[in-house]
Length: 589
Image (cartoon, rainbow, N blue to C red; front, side):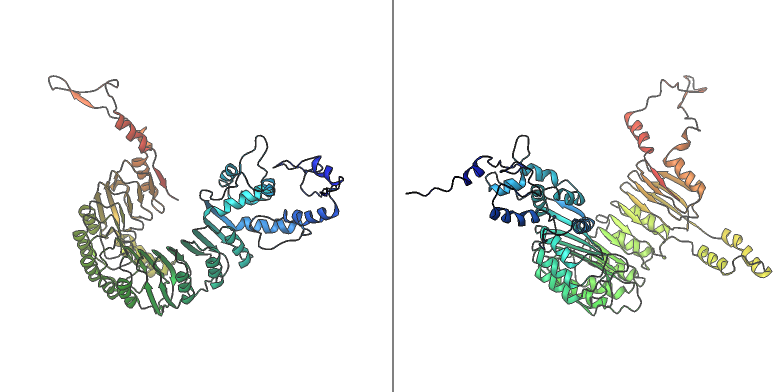
């Protein structure tokens, strides 16, 4: 004989069958949020209590189980801290989608059924377009929306976090664990960082490909070279690593077969630096500007060619760069180099340029800013790279003149960028300013006479003129070139011109024939010069000057007459050119 269950329990389950996806209770019909059904027995009610407590948990705070008696303000504070930390999130295509034939509880939490409701895949696609702050608030609506937000975080590809001083390592770990599919991570540290953060990132993100650490002001990076090398060795998929504030590196040994880009800044007193990265393509090493830096740059340069044969871009910034360090780099025979930047090396001369042009024959960018090369070095560069070089940066090079810049513009037809800021300077003017500052507002006769001689000294100076005619040049930077008083530019493709602090540039000796010019920087220039720039690039005073109509001689050639207005027709190209002239912006104080 088959035993039947008691008849009293049957109506409780049959009277109001639960509707899939409904927000109301399936037994009594009341809203389910914060609700314990009175129709259920004591055992069933006790089973629902932990579930109602879990409903209070927010996204990205799943790492610790909060009891149902936790106060709401504490949860709000935690949520605001999460919102502040999640700065930018870039989402990819959602990889996790709620299946149609899932369990009943999953559909109940998602709540996507019913007439006019969206499927979960569409909801995820909508939520992934929200900002991180909006995602956090959406996750607090209900469990169904929180589940969709969880899927959005799982599909995130890039995350940028600003870690405030109040944030703990557990909080950062919970955020990273929520986004286990991240491939690109950027941390902006507002508090000190050590190897614990590296361990948290290595454990939470197994598929990390790009990692960047930015340091705020007055924040210390305590990561050592051994810890950084161990992190790179463990991350088999890591291809890009950028770390700021590397003042405590000491000994650095990096070995990786996947690393292709490495940026390290604020390096100081590196005892030994070894790179064993056969696939490394880009290397940037920025050292501190301290005279007591004991890093051996010559030995470091020698190792690069043997252990990193595929290097294409090299950037080294150090005040201790010299000809010997450049010779060690060129002896490595890096034939694939496309970008070479050796910045702030005042002991780099034309001898180093000779070594560079003999080793690297396919350079596209050459940056020797802060060096002591002369016009002879520029001529060597132009003779070797006429068909490849497109960007030449020679800022803070006091030994070059306008003749060398003009020669580069003529001999390098592919140039798109020239930067010679603070190179063509008026040294006499600087000395004169320093002399005047020694005796400010002094009324004594002898010293007053010395200050009165300055106009005569200034009239005897010889300024330089710069004439550039180029077909592909797009950006020209002449900031701080106080030695220029004449500038003629005929560059049809030029769109950015920097004339900041060109104090001696004469307004009547300025000619800009650049129809595509969009930005002109003229901070620190004379008012008359700014007016001349506006007159030429913005055509502001064109209304005050009458347009001269073309003239035509009579049939007998005796007299010239003006062609009437209705005869003059502008072509479409000329109309378009006139419209483009009004799009230029002059930036000044």
